[in-house]
Image 1 (tube, rainbow, N blue to C red):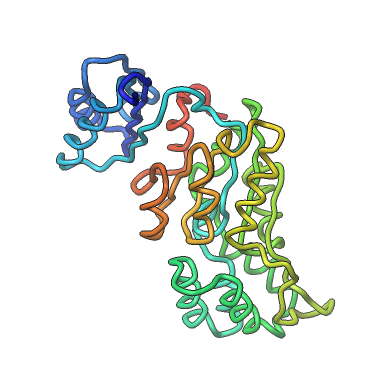
Image 2: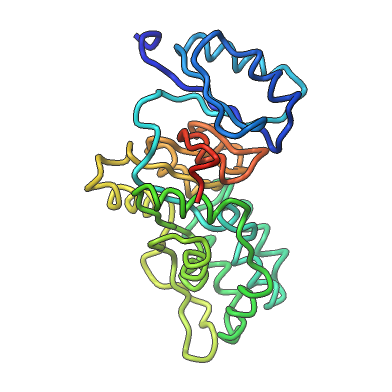
Length: 290
């Protein structure tokens, strides 16, 4: 059955490399191939057994690359739904805020356990936010200005998919203060996250209910795809355990430099390249990038 369905294998190198590119392309089966980025990214269409064998062969080579093997139909998705912390941005906002309160190492340890799925997300979030009690509201903007930066390709990914008609949404277990600003910087149309409570001058050490965690991210994806053929029309990207439900339910779920449990469950992974790889995986070429 699967052998009769056309599949596409996409290969992306971390940088332009003619020798590595030719070696990888030369290891592919004799089938239709398309260059997506000169000496950096290409795709091959064939049947599943041949492409699976090709992946096994090139995995033995001393070359770093990211790849995605998926059915050829409906690869360009109608919804881009992304985690924020350690996905669209290179930081965990709560860890950086905790640094201003003097608790960064402690909070970072809890964050790591939560992202690995070793402890419950809701309780871990409340515990960490409690340590932020008393931080002046001005600290939020200072933190954003001085500590937070987009990962390469975040804006290209969002703006390109939007230009081709896709919805673009950030769904974060972090905080709306940051997701609002990251959405604006990267070009996402909508954002959802948790709300830090304050008394008008300082953080109270509390977060508003309900907490946006694993199931809330899944529900958000279902909501945003209810009018565009359901979750299979979505591409979901994240790195932590609270992203698992949306990643596994999406038509294409990508683990981005992710925790082991997430990498194991996702359809494919970005481990060596940047967020523009999510465009290559959908068949976009360099000249189509915005």
